Image (cartoon, rainbow, N blue to C red; front, side, top):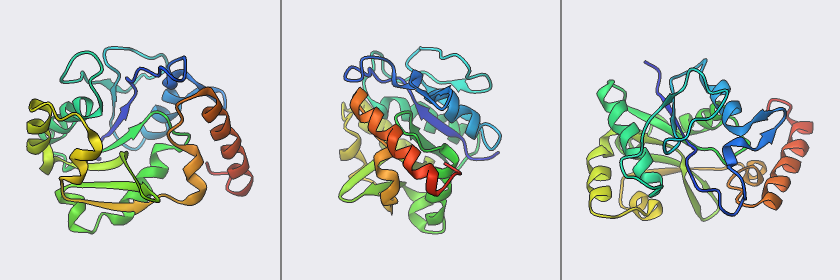
Length: 204
C-alpha cells in the first residue's frame, strides 16, 4: 500500500470568513484540487471534523479523536493509528491552506526519506526559522507519544514536534507565498504568487 495522505480541512477559517477548503483556484475548490492530485498515487484521508465536501469522491473521511475542532493533533492521531493498523510506516500530512499540490510536497519530503528520522519521527518543511509540521511526513513510530500528548491535554503542534525525533527540509523560497493563508488578502497574494510562479514553472 502506498503511503496515505491526510488532508487537514476541518479548521474554523474564522479569519478567512469562509471555509478555506472551498476557496476556488483555477476552476476547482482547494480541497478537490488536492484530492484529485493525490488519489491516483495513494489513499487520501480527510480530517474534516464531520463536514463533507463536494467533489471528494474516493477520499475517506476520518473523525478527530476529540470533539469540537480541538486542533491538528486531534486530527492526526486517528490517521496515524489507522496507518499503523494498515501496515503503513507513516503518512503524509498536508493542510488545505496551500496552493501547492500534494504530490509536489511529497516529492520534496521524500528527498529526506533515507535519513533515520524519516522512519523514526517527523520530517517537515521549514520556512526560514518557522517549522511547518502540517506539511510533513509523520512516522507511525510516534503514535504512542502522540496519543499520550493528546490525552494529557497537550494540543500545541509546534511544542509536540520539538519534543520528537524530527528533521527539516527547507521550503523553496518561491513556494513560501503559496502556503498558510488566513485572510482573503493573504489568499489573493497567494493566487498572484502562483500565477507568477506558473509563468516560470508551468507544472504548478
